[in-house]
Figure 1 (spheres, rainbow, N blue to C red):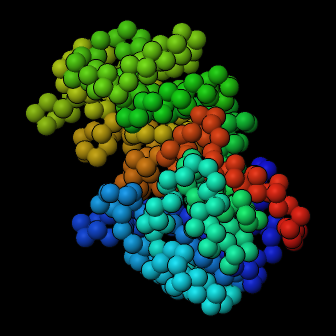
Figure 2 (tube, rainbow, N blue to C red; figure 1 turned 90 degrees about the vertical axis):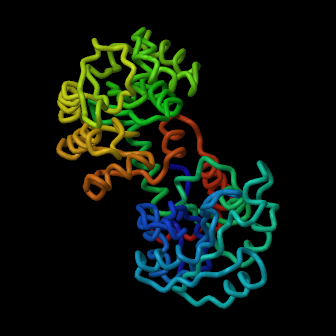
Figure 3 (cartoon, helix red, strand yellow; figure 1 turned 135 degrees about the vertical axis):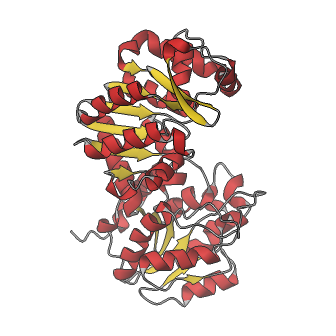
Length: 410
């Protein structure tokens, strides 16, 4: 971990920009819904304020051109609830109002700037992000920069990459925790180390399986969802056109890569023994021998659930990404719920990643009972796939560049 942390700095009286990820789904009134990211991101903000820092919070919401691109005004209220502190919303990013608001802050104050994605520069540049107006206008008013937005650290936005070029920078508590946990389970996992992969993002799962099997970070892979159907097809099983066509639309490359992985690691990759389909709005379970079938496969079956649960209950650590089936429908939540509950009951260190995974945990009342629930989707996948995250690299480079300015208080 070659980046710096809160404990490496004396932050009292310092003006600190904290980049977090408050991005949320919106309700029918186009208001942000409270979620795990807002709750977790409040930790660093509150701690810095308690230590006497002047905390300037920056985040994004939505994408340009999408309906969820809204202001951060309602986010400030949600953040105030979790920090139990007054957070002032500033309807500006780096203009005169924003700069004057920062200059007038007192120790312990917290402000939330406007949606950084209202600034076109945020997403356009791939290099020299430190030369943007965003960075050049705000950095003279700041002492330090904090990156606590793990979920977007795979991006090269100016608010993530630009400030560490010109300011001493460190990781917030969430980013620190994410990297410590994920690095540990990749480099020094408890055995047996189990991967539980489901959901519909087959390309992401293929990357993770390839990296963790070839690096010996995983001992066994339990597949479900579209991921399992991908491997069944790669293994020569005719699953039927209803589901096979979905896989073909996604990528033939995924199927080819799955074949290569099976050639080397077939004994480590488990595929379902049975599955569930919907007939007349009822859950019907069938063995794999019944394939091909012209009904969409919506969940794993009882035999598969039992076999996977036995493995999970005896695991050293389990990494789960993606649901086992269409958990949003009551009759097809069984696979996801029972496997996630088994992770909770086991003595394994359990790690959950992905937005749909977090939604499932929340639905089943398991969110607070898990060892670690990642706030990242794409960043989580890329990191455990062995790829470097630009945001983290920027922190590492900043530590090298500004190490002489650091006040260690240990």
